[in-house]
Amino acid sequence: FFSSRRRHTRLLTVTGVQTCALPIYSVIEALKFRIDNVVRAVDRVTVAQRISPYSPVLGEDSDERTIYENFADAKVRAKIDLRSLKAARQELRRVATEKSGLRIVAPVYFETIANAYTRNLFIKVAQKIPQAARRQLIIEVLGVPAGVAQSRLSELASVVRPFSNAAILGL
Image 1 (tube, helix red, strand yellow):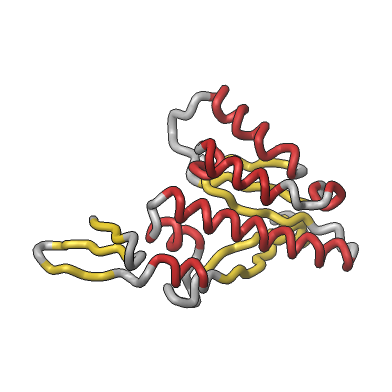
Image 2 (cartoon, helix red, strand yellow; image 1 turned 60 degrees about the vertical axis):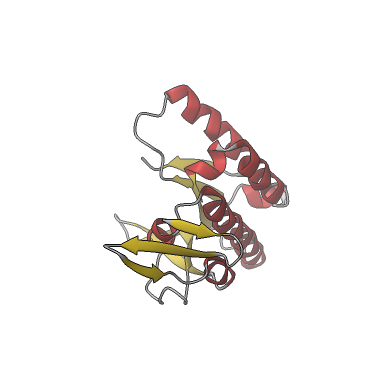
């Protein structure tokens, strides 16, 4: 695996054949967000809407798992997470004007919250969410590694909690 800062591309050598991935930042810049309904199974009522990043560059059916698997670099994932949080902020504005009461679920990768530098970037973006809108936000922390100490999980949950109604830690 080779990463070039000058061209912002990723190169991978597989059995002696060099392939070149799409430029990383063009994929991130082309990133879009769709809104997926979260439906309560019992009565099929929509209780929340989830922000789901996808990239037309990777294909219309790309989802956050595809995106995160393609970009293992924590800084790139953090950029995606910050864009997701900004998309959630916009969606919270829409929900507030409609007075629908729906919750908005925003995915954030574990490494973004665990790393001090990217955590501070997350906090700066999250602080721009109006206090009233925070009651409608649920932050879903993805990619929590197995074996993380309970005290560490509590610490990370305390980072996102002031900016949301709830935090979901996905193991």
